[in-house]
Image (cartoon, rainbow, N blue to C red; front, side):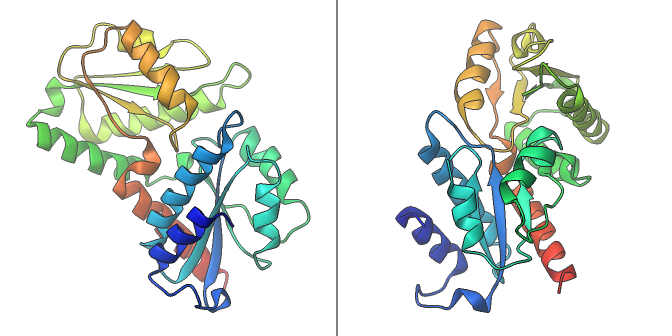
Length: 256
């Protein structure tokens, strides 16, 4: 375990470092990460895991990205059989159904449903968006929202998930206009953001921050001359953090 991960885990659990970890249940949050620069993404994911842990203090929650060679396997080898794995992904695609199980191998670690298809995710995000609108004193019916998503050039599944999520959000909030754009397929984020007015928001439909959120999304919005504000990624929203904690707690409790 890296020193920063140990510090974050100890803080989140609110315990001395000498406390025996086997007193707690365990869980592992897994994200894609950043292959070109793994460590910052690992640190960001560990911070997210700590925020989740603050809402599920009876569970020791660890984290690992697929992009760090050998790290997932190292963490799994340090965890007991039966430890649930929570995929911090927006779709149940190739990484969740193929890459992750292959890396888990023969270990008895069940894979949970990913964040992006959680039926309560739209409620959690709608709660956050409603508070953001109130803070700005904006009416939803006069506000435009751009959902910036990853998409895929090989499968329609990620786009279908993003569009389904957008429909659920719109049914709960009722924006003046809600458009969806993608990094890896048309329509692009720049196309989706064209023509937006000052009273507009962009929500990155990404589980955690990375190269796409830090580089591709801002570039696309700049290309479209998007005048609005860009919101945090899903994993940084407090209501979503609480949702993840509840799902992990429910899964762990059901397994006992």
